[in-house]
Amino acid sequence: MNILILYNSVIFIALIIVFINFLINNYLFKDISNYNISNCSFFKNIKSFFPLISILIPARNESKNIRRCLRSLIRQDYPNYEILVLDDNSTDDTAQIVKNYAEKYKNIKLIEGKPLPNDWLGKSFACQQLADAAKGEFFLFTDADTLHFKNSISASISALLENNFDAISVFARQITVSFHERMMVPFANYFLLAFLPLLLVLKSKNPLFCTAIGQFMLFKKSVYEKIGGHFSVRKEILEDIHISKQVKRHGYKFMIFDGKNNFYCRMYKNLNEVIKGYSKVLAAVFDYNIIIQSFITIIVFLVFLLPFILLPLGIFLLDFPQKLLSLIIGQIFIILLLKLIQTIRFKNRFIDIFLFPISVVYLLLISIHSMVKSKSKSGVYWKGRTYDVRKEDQLKLVKDNFLKFLF
Image (cartoon, rainbow, N blue to C red; front, side):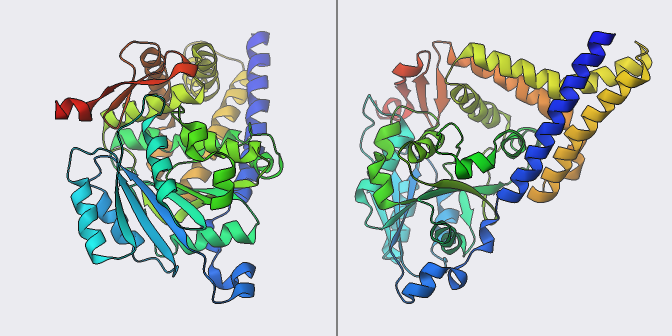
């Protein structure tokens, strides 16, 4: 029993440390909507000069999303931007939709994507083609399934220039509708704020302390080119995180922002998409190292799920002493308090606070699934392409459904 008390004391102390980091991160994770051109010293000094921003959208079979995305982007209050959409070998009418918009709006342009080379992964190649065609002084990469408010661009460029950053990434408000989405998607913000020390993202030059999301990444063009662009991350599944690390690796300043009041995104719409999407992400986060991923998966089980199992067992079956029960209750309180703060900030559903243990079960099962898929011949599937990721340094395309469609 003393071992159980010692173990739960360690977990309780660890959760207190996590909670403190969570509170600090909530302060440092600035709302991008607090920035605007009228208050930005750069634009006050320059006055009428507005540098050209290239909005770059890789699109592969996005006919269900691209209209809404373009409709939101053409309503921006920033006065000087171009929109380039790369049709990445789509098999639907993505290209035709963009062509229709390009005929109506002069600042929208469609780029036909080239066939994917063997030594590139899909999204990185699409983004690099977009960058090569862009004319702006700033590059904004955003996804086709995003919906932008009118101040999306002006707020982000103001935040970058006001803080003298070289690149930033803005995290959208994630729309979750189905039960499966609600159980999994909010984990990204939960673990981001709980475990990543944003103070070190802001201050440290170590690329270890860095992350990003490809839904919204803004670069100074000169910085993007000096770090090697997407060519430098051409074989990375998580090209967004790795290119943010490239920014730091080259000595430039990078930071992430909260964009919940500036743009929305619904990443997945059903259980199948949730499993495929997070299986791809989780394996890549750990560089396809099954030992490390297994260890972290066990830690997540011990810290975030086991207390919910031990409490009823300790009360009704095992007759735990009061001290041990108090430690377990304390752990659960901190875990749910973190979830409560996250729910309020990101406007998630309050009922999901009490479903948190189910969320953890989802996470654990998908993590196991991702390990199996990453080490199997079937590979990791995403956007109609399948990649062999069994050897992290030899990632390669093994199947492209577009080619199957053609032949």
